[in-house]
Image (cartoon, rainbow, N blue to C red; front, side, top):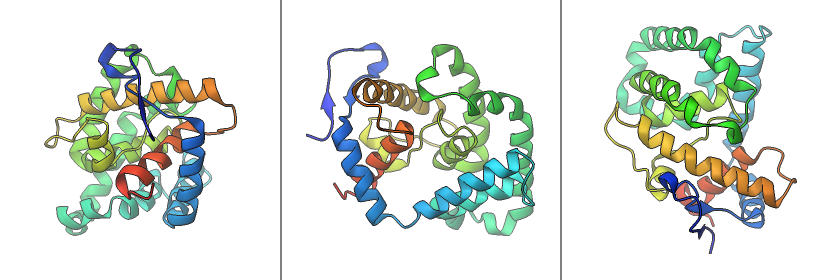
Length: 216
């Protein structure tokens, strides 16, 4: 069974799903073989790092949109944002400025350091970003800005973790529940193996292969 259910950690059900290292490694291999868009993720990660360090000719917003407009293309297709591009850029710029300092502190933290003390600020930020980017785009944006702290999700993944997405503006609490589950997965994987350089990204690749694409 790809995902085992445990009885420990009943608080908010965060330890409901525990992954085995072998399952994650197998999924990573499948992901590398099957998913060409990983190139966009790696490129966007490099671009965002360069922009944050002042080494890029692109703005932080432009760098983020490299990924958002490829991995979250349906949101842009159906929201008509193409016709409001300038305002969309300004909205993202404003969010980045408002949360710049806070996101900077999270960029150097890992998922395993996420605690209840973080939840109020995450709720505030997620609510603000969601109005501009939707719930899936918000997770992608936050992940690019703090890639070892914020997990990625999409609708299929959220549904599989019993965190089905709600109407716009009602997903911060759901994302926090997803973060708690992911934190437990990261902690358990790190107890089992030290071979995963980036367990958070590895878990996302597993989730994407199993729930989004059903390759495994």
